[in-house]
Length: 289
Image (cartoon, rainbow, N blue to C red):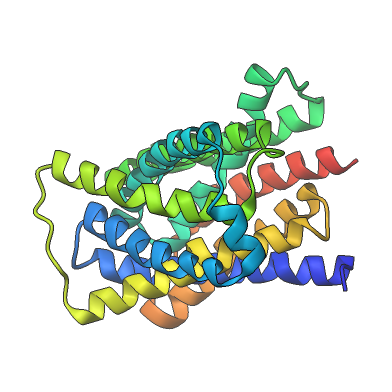
């Protein structure tokens, strides 16, 4: 039943799954580089997304792509590759919950880019929300230690590239089928991430089975379950409502990090993180009104 209740449940599932995905990825990053992890993460995501080919309708969509759509998805994959590389580099050096807080800055960048590129107007409340979020970022950059500050830089760059990607998706949403977009994005990301790995002069190798299991878990929880449940939420509730619910992702990340790896942000990190999330919620509430 396509109800608001089921839509809210899918959005909450997305937040939980995405929040949990950060934990196996963080554990794996203690043993491999961000580039190696990203490569294998999307090898597994590509394999898992290929399951769509068993569905007749989705198979027809995937196997009959337009050349222009493929070119667009390839360009988007390059942008996602930079976002993922910066994001994993940030997650490698800071706590999962801190990284998750900073990733919320994607919403602020998306609003700013929509204002600049799509000529969407900023309301006074949206501007206030942006200022609150920037204050949270300021705390991470200038009121914490150098490691957290460096991690914040990586996560903000990641959020910027994710925002660029989402604005492009928004402009072309009517042309991008969900199944084909996920299938080809995951397919394109594998060679692109391999190229980044080789450009960084790293050797491609097969990690031990424990790292591969952690990576497969991250792929299942993030690019597959997280994205799929978000798409299902959008079919039932409006995007602003879904975005509001998924702002709980950092809190789930913090909870899982505490239980699984006994990691928790410091009070100053909580302050900065809650300001970012609070600013984003102010923006999204303004968009709903």
